[in-house]
Image: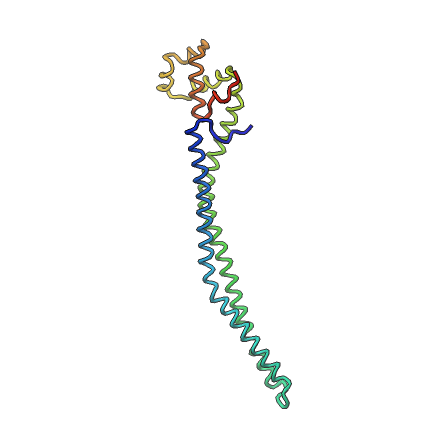
Length: 206
């Protein structure tokens, strides 16, 4: 069974707070990215107007060409120039459409970069620390199923804990461990497990 949070209330509260802050960090930068996208997209407004104006001009010229096309004496002498002029409107509309497309791409890239960079940088650190603790706590929790397992954590405490901390438990903690003194072994083991955030009292089957 995977251990996601510490048994000790203070350690568990810090973990929950860190997870909540990470979630708020992600949400905040997503909102900032949306604002950047919306702000950048305002630059596309001239392109939209240009596209609309070019399209409208082209439609009017084509319509005018169609209307004069059937007039007597005029034939195609006036209709064709009007249709040619309509092509200019089409080019203007295409230029406006290209401008809008370019702005949309810039807005999308800007939004993604704005959100991704801070989220990935902080998230990578948070995830690394979180997964490291989960791996260590899960591995430690698998050993705590009887009081005999405390001997392993007591031995680990002897090799990892500062001398000043060990001295508060016993004048001769290594000797006490070799002699199998239960009180010292329990104190050493509890000390080591507390650093991980686990509580033997909640996990031991006596």
